[in-house]
Length: 168
Image (cartoon, rainbow, N blue to C red; front, side, top):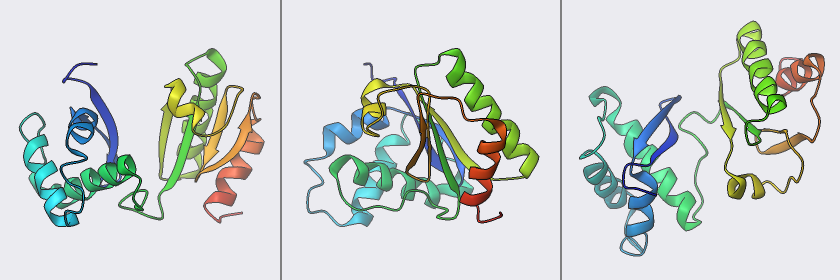
């Protein structure tokens, strides 16, 4: 792992790559213990702005996203995204053909149904393990494992997406 590792996070509803986020949070987690959230967010913002371009018009969203990632790391409660109504979808798998097809099917259905969602393909075995699944591909919608070790049909995927957005 180098200091140039890029971590994907959601900022203002968009997936954004941040250089050095994971390493910085790991390095300073103890330093911030007991510190108010505003001070933690300010310190993360200041340090991460040295290696990352922070879009001025959404600076507050970056601060909130950095604080959210810090809280995830130290195990404190946090809001999943800065848009609580945004659907959270994760495809779990190393990148096999079925994993890739599941991701493509989801993107196609999201476009067809005009569903805004944060779709992430998780390839890291350690992170996949946190979901308790042993077979790939796996699909997680809003924190719920919907399928593991099988390819759901487009019809089933469509039904799950509509149900998750409460548009049945």
